Length: 493
Image (cartoon, rainbow, N blue to C red; front, side):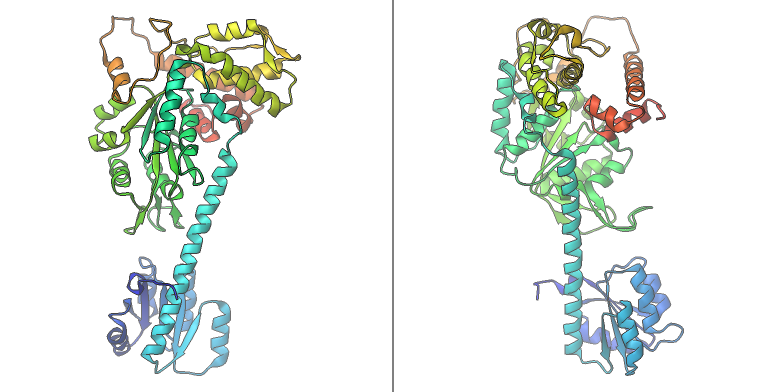
């Protein structure tokens, strides 16, 4: 029999006579965690807040027999084992009850304490095995879903390849941190290779064979992110009809990648800090602590860390997450990488789409290199994919390259490539944003960007006949991210 702590599982005993309950209490008060109810009605009310491993009921009770009670109890707590105490050898009734599934075992009265103790231990062991198997199946199903949706393309890691000094420095730092258990913050503009870097850290670590769980934080509003990360117990909130493991539990012994979390609610901050410091998780509505061993990799846009501080995020949480900051330089600061990246994407989509184009002309490379790439690597990938579709020959020409109309970022003061800053300067981007600048005319840039994005999404939806999955694929984003953006921009599609 499994080595279980029998006192950690609830046992509900139901009888209409107090003397019988007292006898049960005297015999088993030190061996099991027992709850008592006088009659079926009181016991059913107790089941609304109690999750017992075993329910023991006397057969002969006024108003509601033990079998009738166990039938109703099974509907509310289907995992609990039902044990019937009876002084009547009515085998027909007992057989029907056992066949119905409401009664798992029956004991004839007067019961023997040693015999009944064995029955209770066996029932608790079966309950514990059932719950553990369900938890493992749930984790396996979730992980299998991640593998199906997030499976790695054999050449995806080519996206972080590059000849520039900046990317060589990034690659070196990935190799350094991958072998450690340190949490990592990846800072980069929209469209940079942040998820690719997170996967590279995971694959290069001893956790490679364990889950890599990605969470697109923008897809969750309010306390939904807290529920998604920590899971919940049945009845924790309206709609929580079943128990569910959170993604932190699913990432046990592996890596969880939090993509662009917004300022976090205070309760979520405290929960995350407990994970980072003690490796402990509690599902919503539960007091049971689950131990997890998980590395957290976080992606942020430049300056977010300072924004977090201004928003009142716990300094200890910021400090814990910022142990190893990793800055990804934007593509316009490492133009010498554009050719290698473009050729990588061309190979990727030529193979997927069975296109004939296998190279880019020098003029096409020159056009790509001259562009400022406000959408960084993701935009380059989209441009090359479109070109691979439009091209009819072996070589992509400049006329096959179509850039998305979007604001162009300012060129850096020097065209010299910038390398990633050393680990000792985690707040460099925030300080740069906070530095005084010369006065400029005030424009509502946010509204302009929203309008551009709205036009692009509407055009894409029209091109794809309203197929959101195809739109998400063309823009290189998850469908959950697309749904969030459509909702944010008021597009009813």
